[in-house]
Each structure stands twice: as C-alpha cells, then as structure tokens.
Length: 189
Image (tube, one colour):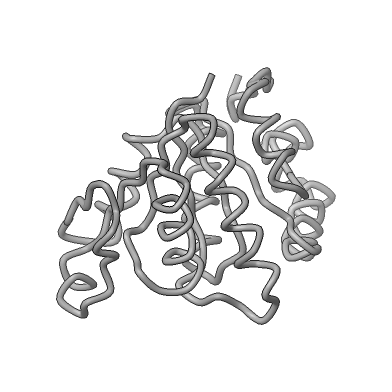
C-alpha cells in the first residue's frame, strides 16, 4: 500500500471550477486513507486548494518549495511541514525521495515536466513508482494522444506508455494506489 504520494498540480486554479472541486475531493480521500501528500509547497491555485482541503480533512501534507518562491511569499503557511530547498531541481528530487507514487492533477508546463520526469525515471528503472495522470474532464486527452503518437512513431514502446496510469475520478486514483499491481517494464531489458 502506498503511504506517501507526490502531487503535481497548477499554481493556477484553471478555467473550470471542477478542477478545484476534484482537487479537494482527492485531498479528502487521501487524508481518509492516511496517505501523506507531498507537493510543491504553494499557497495559490490548485496547490493552495490541495493544502486547504488536506488541513480541513485532518490529513498530512508536506510542502517542498524553493527559497526563491518562499521569498515571493508563495509558501502555504498551513502545511504540516515545509521543506525549503535551493532550486526547482532539488524540489523534484526531494518530492521523489518522499513519495511512493505520483499524481498529476491539472496544471501547466511545470506539472507536465514534473510528472514526465518521474515517469522517465520509472521507465529507466531508477525506481518503480506509479505515475498517474488525473484526466479530469478530458484535461489530459491531448497529452495522452501525443504519447500514442510517440508510440506510433516508435519513440516509445506501448508497454512503457501503458505504465502511465490514467484515472478519471478521485476514486479511481485510490483504487490504483491500493492495487499497485503495475507491470514495470524497464526501457532496456
């Protein structure tokens, strides 16, 4: 069973209010399952909503934030722990160390970059941790389509694409985390 999950999400709330609603649902469900959350430490957008909802649900959330963003007063003051690091790269390393799995909620380029780095590290065999795209309201449809395009053009194997898990409901995320029976296929076997 997964005990700690790294969550990547937007520093914006996005256009659809449902993004915030489902972020709060995920925080509540993870809190109820006593799964610790690790995230980018922000107080704004979906990151702020995730923390607020976790606090309300009496869950546990750890922020990992670069000092530069703390200086800009973007750190959430209510996180159970706030780890201040020197860079964005160090933040990802720390989140990876503290997490048994990763979830990408809706977000921008930073969110895509973070989940794809964790996915790449899994694909290369650095660790075997589930990577989940939360495809709420089809948000990641085009990204999934692009991964299929990579497979069609032989830049990615189908077995590797299948390692990027897709969930369309908060409950589906919990099921993936509880039934971690994913077949990991290292890139070079």
